[in-house]
Length: 637
Image (cartoon, rainbow, N blue to C red; front, side, top):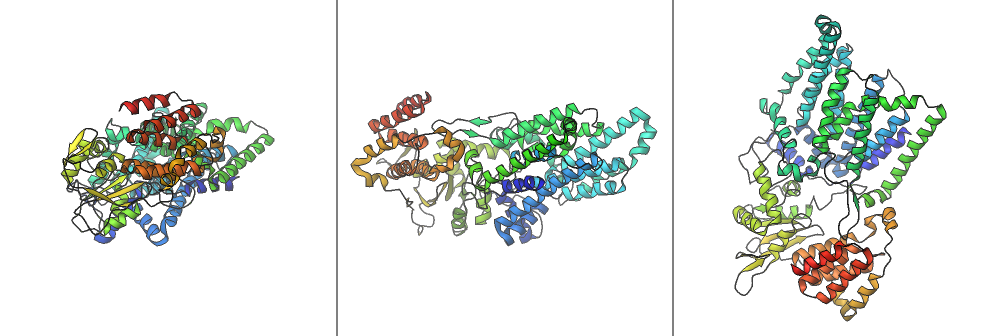
């Protein structure tokens, strides 16, 4: 049973990398090896050249960089899985210590399985922070019992943690709450003198924690840096509103039903919310058995996911061993045969989960990173980065938030923005986001930065692609959604299904514009007059909703639909229609999203008759009242 549970956690973590932070983490480690020191002044963004950069993650970055550069992405992923396995092992160790060496139960294995499903397992320093948090709490619990090893180990753990991640601050919070409550509780029960005698070792160990935290490359600046992060997490800023992991666990949506698209269940958030409630209920059921110091830590850490979803792992690691007591009380009363059935149920669930993950059913249905080792080009546009590296030194790069870290790493160039939200100013983030939705803001940013290269994500910056693809009319003016301007022309020199790289007309003129060459681009032209008959045949394909729950969205030609979206942004109508027709024909079932995108483009072209046929098909097959509203709104626009 336990082997299957741990294997399930491993296969869930062995997934394609979809991580906005990995690029700047590798870049910071490369900076260290090149300069022999951590960065102190912003080295990766030209937009804020004088800003301070406090990089407390440097030791973790060196480890991941070594694994990545020597063993590839698979080596970095494996190292990350080892760290998460260590965190789970420390969790189990603490659980056994709290129960005087009891054998881990099936219920505990089931909870860990649920935790693996719900917690993001990507390559991030949080994996190591969970290890440090577990060790800190283990030391606190041991020192409380008078164990000298725990007392000596506590400041050692804090000295390591402060040089691996800025959330070392949670260790200080846990230590202060645990020791302070322990002393206060014993003083109330037995008097201050007796309390000091019992907790002296613990208090001295905790007192040593703060001074050792100054042993970091930034000294006092590093110690107080977490306050800047806390301000971001607990603020009402645009970053807080738009970065999904910074939103409250019970805020936002747990599932979505996009128009013409497939239902999306945010499985990790959904599972985290259920597990959070289960732990809270378990703690309340066992409230008498949980010590006052543990309650102090648990209550404080329970607030963390309520402010930012990404903090759930810290709550689970800190309070989980205590909160599970409430559920174990009922399991102890069950007969042995019932507990045996529980073991078989957990083992069976883990086995089915492993099968679903390795066969691709899991990631296809939940639209999560797929099983295996690879970089998702939507966040990691390596091809664009390699091309940028070959450009003249003075070319300025403009990019969006999510791809900046990887572009800077793969090109060894400075970029406009990346995902280090706690490093640069809020104004920079607001400027980048405003430019994504407003052509005038984008054009102003383009002029302000004097960019010669612009990377555009099809998902995040389709409007940028649209603007840069616009050609001047006879008057010499360009026009997009009522915004008129004059300026240089741009050409796409690199593209894949998820991104496009543009160069200004005077930059590297030897690099010619690229045109769509993917399979299916000519399908509309090849069909000729038979297009309408082909579309009518595609409109009658079966659309079994139950099949989506078994095969998931990746059983559809989603890459062709992405090419449709890219062609729309590039204003390449014939390519769009070719990819759309090819996608409809290659799909075994009715594919509503391609029909939707085709209808929208036909409206732009002014082919209202054929657009009406597409809208009619969607209305008949889906029965969604939003379809006709969308059609009417598009026509009026």
